[in-house]
Length: 415
Image (cartoon, rainbow, N blue to C red; front, side):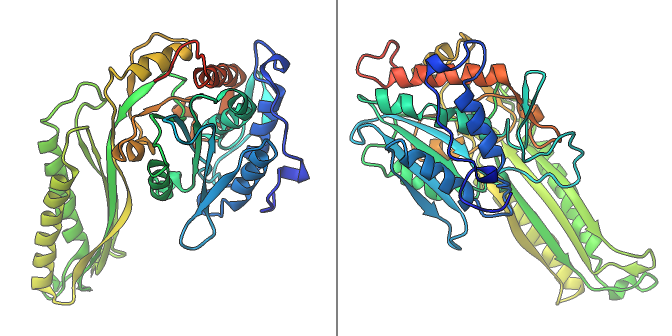
């Protein structure tokens, strides 16, 4: 679709149906229509997300909810923050990202940016990660407007999550700076509606190694960039092996990992390569000191850089950050975790996640945070991404329960 601030094909903003209007065993028609509209926006991280956030802002405005956009420096992307209910009391934040990953090179059986329903599943890019949750939240806005009288609900929608949570920091800061910060944040990444209380943190860098080229018969007159990068790769493996001695059985694997994802350089056997590029990531378990690990890696890179410069003064290693986000370590015995699980229809204890989310940023800002959303992360980023209609229906019921929990006489207080 073209980048216009409306639903695909000029469709109007859908009306979210009340619970009575939705089928008992499936999601309401309004929810399905909303999710279909959201999928129609090709909001991949490489593009502006202004069309989709403008659509959301218009949808909220027609339901009496004002929102504000928090733009990036370039002005071509923005997060959205809206409050429903009394802003002077502690309430609930519902967090989602509006961007999706690309579809190029994937073999889809139906158009990725047009919702397709078959066999009880709704297919489309972002259906699971995470426009399904976004649509569930938006469909529940009339319920929130009607029932969030004792506690507010804050809608927090970001951009560029798929490129390392790059768009969330300003939104998180604005949320933490509300007149009364939220008492709880729920990040709706796909967990099959299980409540997750923790995940690893991550930082990733690209190292661009510049050496000095030359003939392979005269390597002493050159500086081999590939060899230097290989020394760093071996050093990273050694650091990872030392970190693997500290275990946290709540995670799989139960330790901090150091991973070299790519190493490229050289072009011909008889030439000393003058350039190499290495990319690595570190995923830290809660309690691991990311600053100390960074310092270890910095010392390794500095040592190899000095060796390279000793061979060729013009050589060097440039460090380019790729992504970074903190881990999530909300206590598993947080009362809201058990209450949220019961509202979602489960008595299962909180789980940990193998993947990262924006939840760590909210947690770092002092906001108790949990992760809970429809769908399965195993379907994300793949061709024929889908979310089950039954999963959407369960999530819709959860939103209604959350709305009731924000009312004057909640049947089961969340906080």
